Image 1 (spheres, helix red, strand yellow):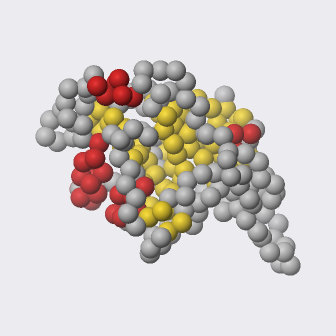
Image 2 (cartoon, helix red, strand yellow; image 1 turned 90 degrees about the vertical axis):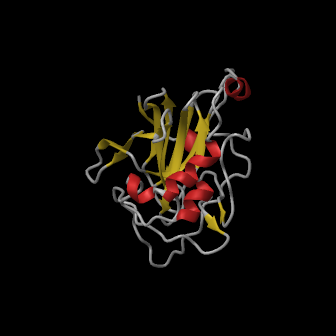
Length: 241
């Protein structure tokens, strides 16, 4: 990843990949319960669940394509790069800006796991980690624009699908999304993998195009059956479009 993208690991080790989860090297951040549709499971009292193994070298979620290189794009900017300053600024002003209001805010986790991507002369795509559930991150995306002393923060909601208790495919849009995300500057595509339970044998994978003003859902894959059989999320059945 180019050096202008901000990612700093201090007290937090982020083991990022499909189903690996989050491992803390120091004090584990407080867990926050995520409101997700219930997943029907048949409990077997005599059976001990074992983690599903994840392949060591899986394919990337986002496939880079030929595009204007990040280095060339950044060379065209004339204003100073604020990438390394944005997350500390948001942490310091978290309460007054109303960021992550529904979760127990952990500044160390936010600083370690959040990312900033420069996408314009004065525009930055901010991936802000608000907290964590038992096995994945809780995060949102913002468009950060600074043309005056006071920056503008525009939330970028994410559209996703889930299967409700009646087995119906349901669409929702929210600013907070659970899971693990990755941004590809070459294609301006964000991929978000969300586990439906800790074993990682079910969940969803969404692909979103950053248009400059929104995150437009391009494709959504989902495996609703938590059956103990692990498959690569990229091989989940497609439910959208």
